[in-house]
Every structure is written in structure tokens, then in C-alpha cells.
Image 1 (cartoon, rainbow, N blue to C red):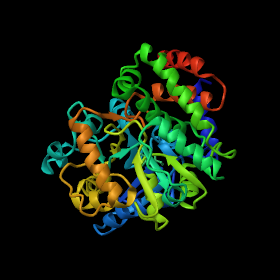
Image 2: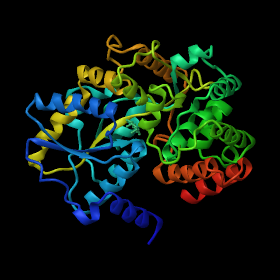
Image 3: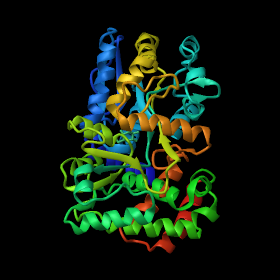
Image 4: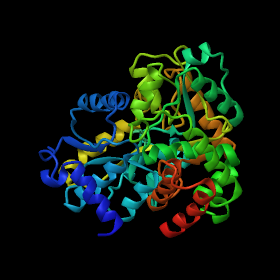
Length: 422
Ligand code: GAL
């Protein structure tokens, strides 16, 4: 079995799908949409409800296909099995290059008629269209823009220890040292490859700015992947490793958020879906928690965009699919959904009036980064390089984080892994 097939079958067994068959639930009725997604945490489920209710109001039923696992790796494995079995869902939550891969396979529907009548070309930022369109055809509906270079901090702990928001790497290390010395877990982290990689996105940006980030993760330049700055990035990852608790391995991201929410940990480095957990717990930005950019990355934004890729379905299911896409793109929905999710709208014409302080900051910084050329797709979340390369980087970052490689070896391994993945 090759690596992919092996991974596929073990994950499917883990998910209980081989035994249960691949057909999923009862066949979707014509006025239902069947949607595969990985939004299973409290905050994510609350946001998804906004969409379900919106559709119910339009007479469209929702058949839920949740596949737990942040970042969506398991969801993509289940999807592959469903499509292979000739049973594609109506729509699938998907990130960046994965959308283009499925479009390339000819599996996605053509949304051009709807897109033209609703003017999507004018209102969706180019950075998202790059993934939502394939060979001139709209194939998916972007529901949000998340960014990955955020810090979520417990304000009470910061106040108690008189810590100011750190703005540089050295200030961050000083703050974490203080938090640890006071008996808290300094960094709430879940040791899963995609979470390690989410931190790595920010750390690489903090070391070498946009030049290093782009050269390494977009251009896949061996000099950047294995150079002195990358070694420094791995050194910083090792420093951060010294601030996580003993039980970090395998922990889900939302449980790490809960450690900050409950005042057990000082900070979490995570995309702004973490804010959804803080809000769900009834916490307020600036009052109970702080959101600020990973120190040393101010002015730059690494983003990902959750999109609903629309699969080619029979004519009988097409009407419900088009209604789903249209609902997702409606400005009022984009505001209502993203206020809950922690992300910001995937359209440039949505007011920030209903967003909290972190949301307003996120929208402003996204627009500014886009204008100044400092907006980059997140490597960890499939928006910088295709899945094969992303997974190769994951392997090295996680092996290093768990002490398998020193920094110099990791930087070297990064060159080899990325080369082998192309
Ligand atoms: C990301 C996704 C977010 C959030 C997160 C954790 O890949 O873009 O919406 O769901 O995974 O599950």
C-alpha cells in the first residue's frame, strides 16, 4: 500500500466508516443539501447553525456530514472515499489548493450563472477568487476569511502579572517566562501536525517577514527552506516547546482554547476560529481576553478561507445547491455568520458594524495587508502550496517539535521533504 492508501484505510477504520459503508446517511431529498464539514467544536457548530437556519427559512433542508478534526485532514480523507464510491455530497467545506485539485479532476459544479447574476467577481477579493474559480468558472462559495497569525490571551493573567502585549519575539519569550514562573501553563497547545504548523506559519513570518515566508512556502526555494533563517525559526519552535504543558500531545485545538478561557493557560497561538470558542463561553474581547498579532508579524496577515466547494450533482439536487451558494454569498449572512465564527467576511462590501473589537481589527488589518502586499496564504491551512507539499512540511515541523530533529537537521529535512513532495 502506498502512503496515501495506508493513511486512507487507517483513518477510515478509525472513523468507523469501512465497517459502516461509505454511503453516508439516507439519500438527500431534492430540497436538501448534504454538506460535509469539520465544524464540530462549540464555536464552529454555533456558526454553522446560522447557515442551517438561514437555509431552513428558505425551505432547504440540511443533511449534516460532520467529520471531526481541525484543519480538515480527516474530512478530506472521508470525501475522497465518498467520491470514489460515486456518492459526492452537495457541498464540502474546503481550503485553498484542495478546491483547485478537485476542480482539476472535473468533480465540481459550474456556478457562473449565479455568480454573474450576483456580481461575485466585483465583491470577492482576488486572493479568494484565485481558489474559488478554476479556468474562468466559479466552483465554490467562500464563506469567510480567517487569519492564522493571532495570539489569544487571558487578560486576567496578563493583568495579574503586569504583562503588556508583547510586540517582538524577545518580549514574547519574557512574557511566557513570567507566566510559567507564576505556575500557569504558558502556551496552551494541542500537539497535532496542523496545530504545530499553524504556529510555524507565524514563527517563520516573525523571523524573516514576507520575503522568507513567500520564498519558503510559496516559491518553495531550497535556499529559504534550508537557510539560516529557517534554522532560527526551528530554534524558536523549540523555545515555544518549552512553554507547553506535559499533556499537549494530541489535544484538540478547542480544548487548548478552553485552557486559556478557564484561566489555566496564558496564551494560545491559533487562527481566529479560536475567538468563536471564547465568545461561546460568554467572554468579551478586551475585557476577558486579548487578541493581538503574533509578535513580530504585525502588519502582515496569513490567511485561509473556508469555502464550500460545490460538487456536480444531478439536476434534481441542483436547485437546493444554488440556493445554498446564494445564501452563503449574501452580505447579511456573511456578517451574521462571521460575527459568530471569529472570521471576517469573504466580501469587501460588508459593514464591520456588528463585529466586536477583534473582528473590526481583523477586517482593518486584512484590508491593509492586502493593499500593502503583505497578505499571504497560510501554509498550514492549504493556501500557500498544494496538499502534498503542505503534508511534507507538516511531517518535518512535527518531528522537530517532538524532539526528533535538532534545528539544523530540520531545516535540511525541509528541503528534502518539499523536493520529494513536488
Ligand atoms: C481551519 C478552518 C477553520 C476552523 C479550523 C479548526 O482549517 O479554516 O474554519 O474550522 O480549521 O477546525
